[in-house]
Image 1 (spheres, rainbow, N blue to C red):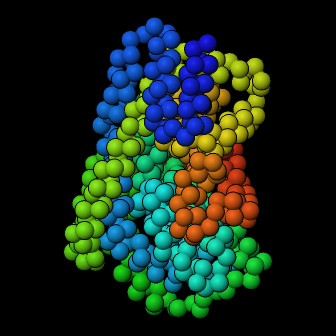
Image 2 (tube, one colour):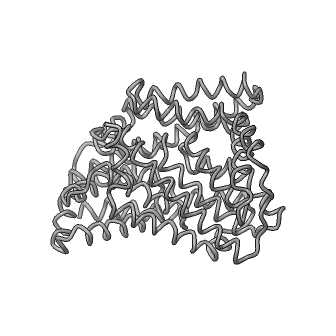
Image 3 (cartoon, rainbow, N blue to C red):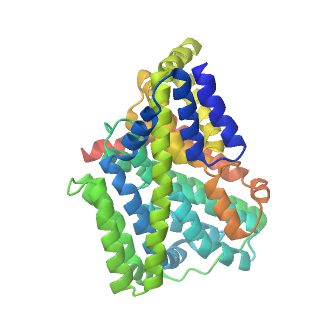
Length: 426
């Protein structure tokens, strides 16, 4: 009965449009009341869920990403990407994907990337004769690359949700090859869709122009190496790297590019504060919800149920992928990671899956969910920028979904794609 109350109240509140943090908190309080436990337990778990030192990295990376968008780094990366791949079929679509790959290594946020890159690229693509649905679909799917590349906020959340036992540096490293693989798959898909629709290409500007634009964009791109190299080499922790990212972003946007105004600085600061408040409230409530599931032995029961279905790791991983894809369609990514990591990770480990490898699988699954209705935050942002409805985008997004699923299956069943690079750095 306790599980019916926990999941029933959560589902009802979510269906009537209650914010996800309140869905988690109220359902936890209702279950605790039914069990006869003091309500203080929920608030203790909420507080302990938010009071994690490594979680400080999340607001600082959010802040650094916003400063870079407002300070002109994104625009210079777009210009460099255009010089490299703008001459390929569907040129601006290819530019969009490459820009997302480069900017994703700076922002670490899919939503920020969709807003920043989409705000620059979608209007240009529409003006050049590209279909609005194509521009939106390329933008929303390419934004998912940021989830896999350092400094991915969600990798940090996964590590915390797993009890802090998984190295954030290993997770950052493990996501690089899958992220680049996703970028390559999307570029191939964009090429064939553009070819079928007859979209134009741009003239290749030459190596000299590309080198010049690289030099202009280099101050922003250097942050990728600073964050990854510093964390991987042990010079500073992921939390410390987020603070360095903010300081570096301020130095570049104020003193190098000289584009960040005082109003931009205030808006970026207030935006980071608002986003941080929302994220931490969700994380705290999700921690209470997760504790209740552990208290009610949900992970152990689910492990037993799956073992009764099959002893084949291939089948179990396929079932986990299907479950995560379904969950990702109607829950936001952060709380979903916190809720499901304590449930799914023991199952994966029981079947011999490395926790770092499983983290990449989970992030990619829930990333695809961010681009899937009814709760597709990235898709909503891209559609808002492109001024089309979600259903218009959905009609033609299937080739890009297919590319994402192919990469997901490769990452799931070929562990070396995720684990080779972390092993090489040890």
